[in-house]
Length: 269
Image (cartoon, rainbow, N blue to C red; front, side, top):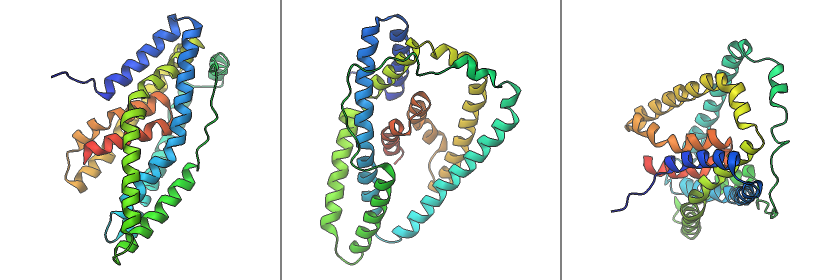
């Protein structure tokens, strides 16, 4: 039986291949890869609102009772966690970073986008709704359908969003996830050919030595708490989260990370 390469190795390979192509390949090859990466990025941003609507609406609507209360608790946890992480980041950066970062760092890096290659062509593909509108719509529809189902109604709408979720899932599994390493390769190839990848690493390696352990400490706390309440192994859940983490830190894009986290969440069920 042929063993498939996991998502984490594919993401790492994408980073390495991107750096190698940016370092040694002809400019036209890099530009082609950048074009593919740019088109994928546009498509990803177009799909993100549908991912939110498909999964959030169906998830809330599937709750028979207490949907509003559970949604409020979940939202509170999400924003509370964000606030704690932000405060922790502020304290650490205020106490530690001034010891090895000053105004001269900006002059060493310059404008990271100045030397990057533009895509050969682009296709205007704007999202049908923005992320905030998609979230609000998903909350309203999910709560509304859940309320209707409690009174023996709303099954048609519920089935519609269940099937809509199926379409989104198929798009993720056949297009988004398989092409994600290519997107990362294009991103790193463009940074490399601009001469910034080693400059950034050379300047900020001390920052990474602080930030990355801080990430893991905070995620360990989150998954430990989640494991206590859910009865699941926090170490296993943290291990499953590695693809999402690598995508986030490699692309610095929440849009690129959302579809990976959807796949990760299914492994934790």
